[in-house]
Image (cartoon, rainbow, N blue to C red; front, side, top):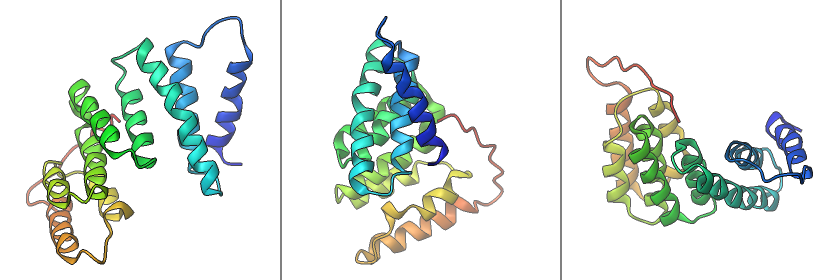
Length: 178
């Protein structure tokens, strides 16, 4: 058992206290624990189940505290990972409106959703909007963009990635908010 799964097990004890409703922070923690523990599950069905469990908890946290960016972000990521691309993209756009420091990460996820919706041009345009920075190391390695059957997309994606990862005269200071 990895640490996210252990965290989830600990947080599930919150549900045993029936003296009150969970507050927005407890809902956020529990929903996020389900989301991150999903990646530690060996079976695909358990991964999917954990992501499905995260969604109502994160939605409930948003109802109680609608301006907490990280909850919108995690909900968007959960939706994207469950192939609910339009809803995930909408949630990531909400993150950008709430907190501009999320732009690199939210646009990365938006581009992933657009790519899966077979909207390669829109995905590339969205990636172009992401400033140079350390996040490009992850974007370049992201399996969501790898598609050997789409050589035109892959060539343009690789060219864009090279330009963004080693920009001329750029020394960005990463602002790791999301």
